[in-house]
Figure (cartoon, rainbow, N blue to C red):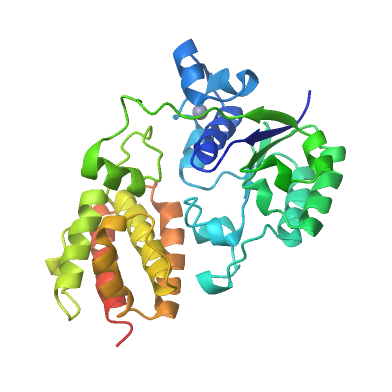
Length: 328
Ligand SMILES: [Zn+2]
């Protein structure tokens, strides 16, 4: 059995989402057999499309919390927030987007190689997701090649690439190649119109999520209120989030967009709120924002646990309001 898949397709074809789906199904402890329609919808090669994750087992819960020890995601630092990985993906790494690397660096592959030979935490498969493989710099590609030549039997490698010709031929030859077909344009589930565009940006195209618009209304209201006054709003003037986990996830997206705007990039999750984001970005200190993002990422790990929801949400709003005046 070949333990490395290389899924390739132009940017915007939904490779990241497809790879995450495949990883979830491989790690799931009670995967379901995919119906023919679901197989077709996934657009993945048959061996990766046969099963879908149950969404309910311990492994699926760990994945949803972004804390599965048997999944390792290797991506360039500059792509983390766009991929929804945030800072939790790698502790202690560069927190400011300015210093974030566009490459997958050799240190990341060395960490991958160490992880690959360690024992599976949950006694099942381990999945290494490398995306985009185009970003492997030459040293990193060579280090990865060594592992692909003698892959540990328990590790399934999933690589995604925008352009095959950007990869070392030796890497390509170690993988099973599959092109991800173009997504169907007339997908009935695709949200339409301006509201649809906002939802697609908010969930970064993952419209098959249970609720792709979760937290979007709240985030928009929060930004409206915060940008309307030039002073720091009282946290009691801010609406409570739908629930704590949604609030944390939404604030991570707002924070990530603020970081992008601060370095002159366009907002990713809230493109329609560009003006409000620009107004706020100027009032917030970059360092405080990075700190807040780090704190939110660790809150996200706790978000699945029962706690005093109202109190936790209040604290969230207070911290957000404080952040707004950090640049004064
Ligand atoms: Zn499961």
